[in-house]
Length: 284
Image 1 (cartoon, rainbow, N blue to C red):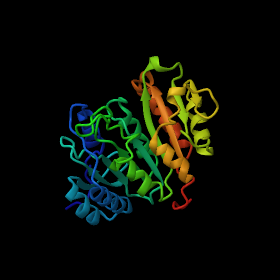
Image 2 (cartoon, rainbow, N blue to C red):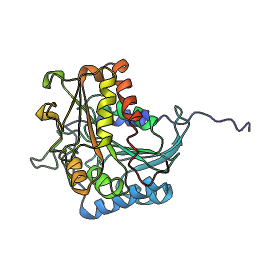
Image 3 (cartoon, one colour):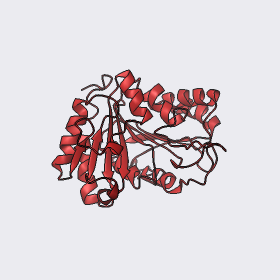
């Protein structure tokens, strides 16, 4: 054997496939209390790099756990993907194992907020040690036979929500949550907000950085952002505000998200703002 490295599985492939496959016609059910406890325990092991332990727990919940290295960055990663065609569509969790975990990148609305998984993957790749959490269910899917929607930004019973409140947030990881909006919704091209929480230095740096790429950028904390885009009903943001965690909500309009020449510099600006800086667990 030559010992030469060969390309690993590009994590963009499974992440993109899950995002492309979500549908509001597919079934969804929140986990039971026991299933939620197990999912939290398994994801905690995954984030800590205990892949055997994570597989032992998450496998029983329908997750597939794999490990490889990213052919773009040549960094090792672990990936847990839930079932996607059953009611146990509980999310995709991608962990960069190259450095201590320092940033959470979240996508609660795949497909509905088109191409946001691509934006999140670029940020995940640019900041070593990041954890990407993406919903595996359409935001307009029904929970069981009831009237509630499976919007993972508002479903506090979901694995996606508790990955933040029970694993990533308590570990000190700031979160950047990536969203999109229709051009007709508001005049701005980008919106940065902190939901119900106060503005943070990280959020201000991110907003300034995105604005520096030329996008018309508004801020949720100074009254410039459209009221519907300030993320004040986002449950991950509400939990972050209550616990004092760093949480930043980034929205780009559809035209920007359709043009890599515009969204790639915007996401690079998010990374350049050093969103992992507040994480005390990460050596600087």
